Length: 221
Ligand code: HEM
Image (cartoon, rainbow, N blue to C red; front, side, top):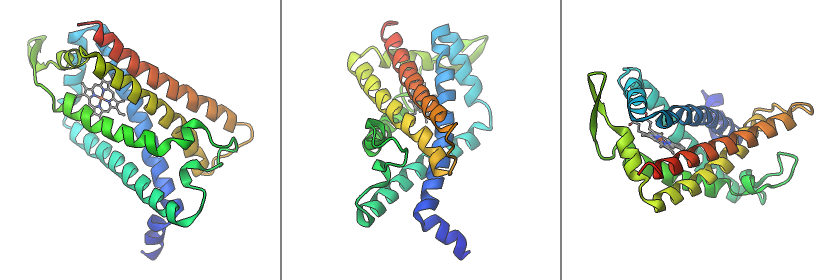
């Protein structure tokens, strides 16, 4: 009991759980992007995909886990930041732990994280809880999320906001991804450079993928 308590209050315990929740979020972002590519196929394909996903009863479990990961990740980030501010001159977020010194991505983690939190709240309000249009695909009535999304991106300011937020997402995840391996002590002379490359590739892919979709939606109007 005391050992568990110490683990959660210790800095390393928090970092390890942050890494674990971050890993889950990295996976979610990739599957969300893959699903969003149905927008390129057309309205029926995208709406049907979203309908299939949300009409599965397991969605409630998945959403609860997802919310837990987001909230856990954010709360621990704030706790670690506060802990580090009082404890030592070099913060958790700006450490030289990568062995490469501070990068733009590592140095901006708290800021890009904050922007992503704001992004997420607005995103859910605009899409998940946004205007509810309905359509019929193969005789089944379902939400016309395609229309909600296309209508939203008719405004170039919203497209610009998404491109900016996705740049933050790219920076945040490209550092977070490789930092995760360091936190779990998975360092290896041979594999660490490959992990760093994969991490950057992931960040660039998701930033370009989501931004590209927002721009594509703008041109559908
Ligand atoms: C072009 C960019 C994006 C588009 C078009 C998009 C579209 C959507 C849509 C239509 C929904 C509502 C799904 C539903 O209610 O069934 C949704 C939900 C959601 N999106 Fe996005 N999204 C984008 C980027 C992102 C990013 C970058 C993140 C995270 C960093 C994200 C996180 C979420 C979350 C957490 C949900 C709620 C999922 C759920 O409750 O099951 N989205 N998105």
